[in-house]
Image 1 (tube, rainbow, N blue to C red):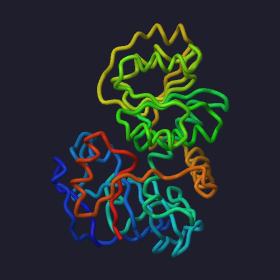
Image 2: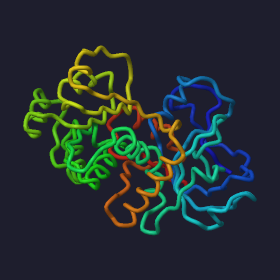
Image 3: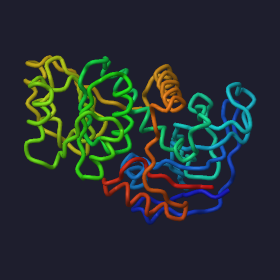
Image 4: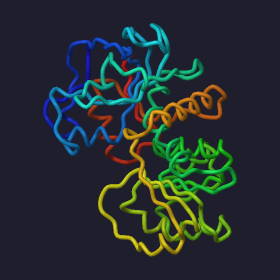
Length: 323
């Protein structure tokens, strides 16, 4: 089979399409014929060696949309021909950047008939991260106000939709007019350009001076102190991403009785994944959720896809089409 592999750590140019051995599913695994691959920021870091050493050649990828090719003897949830989406990364590589991938059945989920394979590839990490942040970590409630920083990105857009479906008042931020338009289309009640001076004052104003109850933070190293200043008393901040250290006034955590939590999807409880996957599938079937597909590339353009991801201006999920 063809796969996008790298044999040494480095820049996007190390990604090459090569012929490799097709995997065989173990007893508990589902062999998925991959139709579309979802590209995630973490994969650009893995490629550079930032997350430690792995065996070579390495095949990246956690997210895909595809169909079941075959199943192991212990698999009862799926059969050949089923449409599915995945979330999983083996520690030794052998991920979804390939024509076929073997995935444990607990990390394979049914893809609704009204959802395309490329849309399925946009679900995994973005939608499951958004759902865990909103429901399990922030314990969000209908009627509360949520601020989604970087709301036009891969995690931001599903966060807006999931929060809106819950009955929250949704505030988003983006840095371009196109991004602001996307966030509005996703259902946000208010959208602000976080490059503008005074956008935090505008957020305070639309919350009646109270501030949001929940904040989803994509770059804590840049915004965490601002979050502490703007959030309401008894608020909850979920850190989804950060690029460096940051300095904060920790007394605000005490004065406002705040909670700050981090999300790491690979440490999620299986019960949370199952609950959120069911919530996502139901939303897709009902039409209240829509996968956020951004730019599309071929397997041979994998390096370009990574450069687009690194640029930080991607709108929605970057997709690599396999077939």
